[in-house]
Image 1 (cartoon, helix red, strand yellow):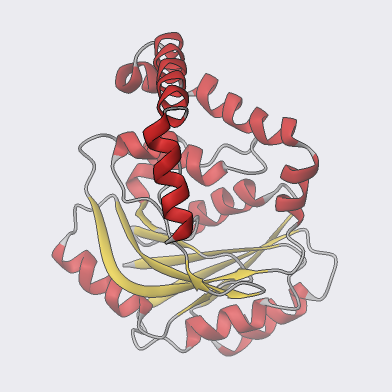
Image 2 (cartoon, one colour):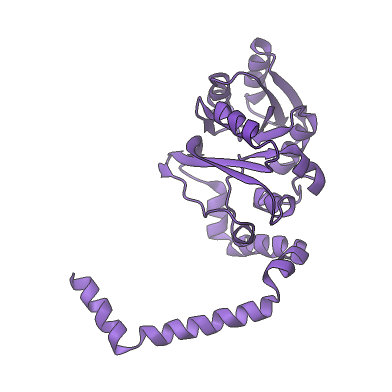
Length: 267
């Protein structure tokens, strides 16, 4: 039922660990599509070694086109009805596919199956995401990129937007899901998200805030018809937000609130 799609670009330091976490699954009926997205390190050698010893791995090589491009390429090659996009430096728990498979059996109509996730590496602990509703999703992403979905929703929306170099997964969820889509949560940690000491994207957001905001602008402009249905006129929403800020400011300047803040600090 499950095709795992692993895009790989210069991940020789981590990809073997990722693929070993797939091999170690208690549920063995899977296929894994390996997409070498133009790597210039030793990634190809490692990927071919896995395909040589396990025919559930299938290897493809393409010119570098970015993460969205590599995911789309791999999904087109996938033969199973559910897709699990897995980044080449992350890990899944040994019972991950078993839990997902049992959930698919109970919910074959599911559009998305997600689960709890934890950080590892330079940061540890639970990855806390907002509880999913479609209207919440329009404001902020509710899923990690490595979340299982029905291939049919990918086909209907046209896949990942290859123009996006970040937020491509959030844009995909916005376009592929609807208010009545069946989204199932497994309340168990099944995925480990590696945090690197120096996150290049985080650094870029910090150094180029304009780039960060341009991604929001792009997603809103592109999906404006969807936002209009669920949130109406953005000017009115902005006006309401301004009024709320003014109200909060007025409350915080009252004598009672200031005394409350002082008492809280003392306690």
